[in-house]
Amino acid sequence: MNAVKEHQSWFSLGIIWAGAVISIPSLLVGNALIAGMGLSKVLLVTLVGYSIIVLLMILQGIQSTDLGRSTVQVAGQVFGKRGSRTILSIILAIACLGWFGIQANVCGEALANLLAEIGITIPVPLASLICGLVMVVSAMYGVKVLRVISYIAVPLLIGISVYGLIEALTGDSLQIIQNYKPAAVMNFTDGLAVTLGSFALGAVIAGDYSQFSRKRSDVLKAALFGIVPAGLLMIGAGAVLTIAYQASDITATFLSIMTPFVGGMILILATWKTNLVNVISGGFALINVFNVSKEKEKWAVGIAGTLGTVLAVVGILNYFTPIMSILSAMIPPVAGVMIASYWVLGKGDKRRWQEVEGVNVLGVVSWLVGAIIACTPVVLSLFPSLPQVPNQPLTGIVISFVIYYIGYRLFAQKTVILEEL
Image 1 (tube, rainbow, N blue to C red):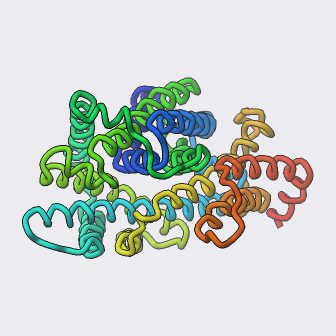
Image 2 (spheres, one colour):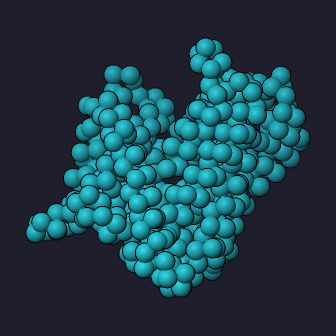
Image 3 (tube, rainbow, N blue to C red):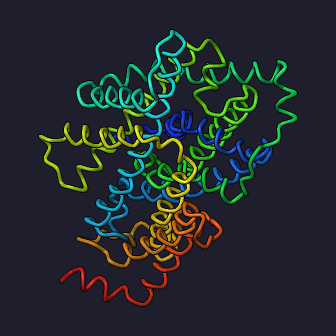
């Protein structure tokens, strides 16, 4: 591991992070934002949102670079070894299963539209079921498929996005883009919540990749040059393409850019590639939560994929915006607690870091309170008859930070003694 750590440059780390942003989910964010905002506002929300994400990635990533440990291990101080593994695994499982369902749903729509072009009619839920099951089986019995599909899908996704942008910005669509007015209205904080939710998990677990970096400045440069440009490009592309091709969803957009067959196949391959990662990561998260034996890992992956497929069949894509808002509320408070511990209480000194056995109650409660309070406005928005609270996506991280800091100052010694007993 030391050899790998010595040789990871900031550029290679930046490429890894940029590759995670160059995906269908980023295009989906652009598609969701442009439905309620003008293009300039979409780009502003993206810039602000990804600037916050980059800040979190830098603060999270440097902890792992300093300690040479993964995110779960670093969080072993604030949540305890067992608490860290359980909390982060649950969050990872929820996020991965949600994303799997969303992308299997996108793939199902693409498959249904593609078959419609040749005269075969199939309901989207059934198409989503077929796509989800194929993805699950390929993840269980052919993990090597991921590498092959990645080599094909990523260049094709970039190619069709760039081609679509060139066509939109040089043809008759340019006037449509300039005169675009959204039919609905989305306020800035809701747009920020969607943007943050799209990569909140990546920001929190940034240390899983930066642990192999040589120095702190590598994390800084990788986050700045890997995340912000890629985020602006992909979300901006999703927004511009939606306007230019006057499509309500990303599937219809892709089918319009080139021929329906080419656009549909690229969309299917791109969602398949990303969902193999989602289902494998979600499966391993379930393994950590339920302490599954190594012999049953394959079945854990299968169960994770099946749950995600069920979400696709029921049409989880229709709830894309609230799901992103919930992720932006639930995940960043983890970073709030870790930042308070390492950067404020520990003054960024790795010698002050110490792993705690079992569960650190203070850290768990701090995260949970922040997450619940931040999720409340999103949950209330699903029930219009109830009193509504403005959605402030950064509320959770601030609350968790403050509770942990104050709690540590007041009760740290008692908490450690209880855990030791």
